[in-house]
Image 1 (cartoon, one colour):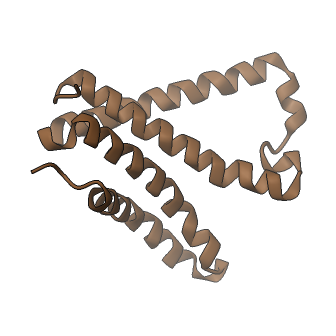
Image 2 (cartoon, one colour; image 1 turned 180 degrees about the vertical axis):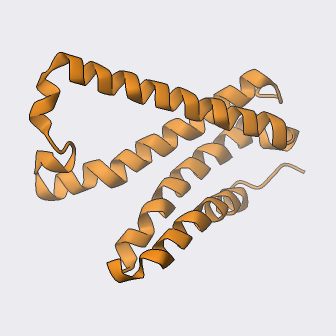
Length: 143
């Protein structure tokens, strides 16, 4: 189904980026908005989105950013990961990686004080490794 190919790498990368984006938006935008009901937690100036040109610019920017991230992920997947990282289990593993990575990026803000900024940044950097190996542990590679 998703044997190693450039197309499969694009699909798996898209799955990862979209799950990461969805979970990240949920953690960073939706939950604070639901807790406060303040539209400023979503957009700093909500009235600026009434202008069609600014809204269109935002949508175009987000689409271009997602395409760039998908292309980078597909390159890395195709170049550095073997056949065992593809297929249905691979798709599940990469989606899980995106979700865990999004949560791990935000978790240091929840648990560490602002005075420990350096430790928070180190934990954010290490979160990619934690997410990768945790997803691999939850959905193991096929033998």
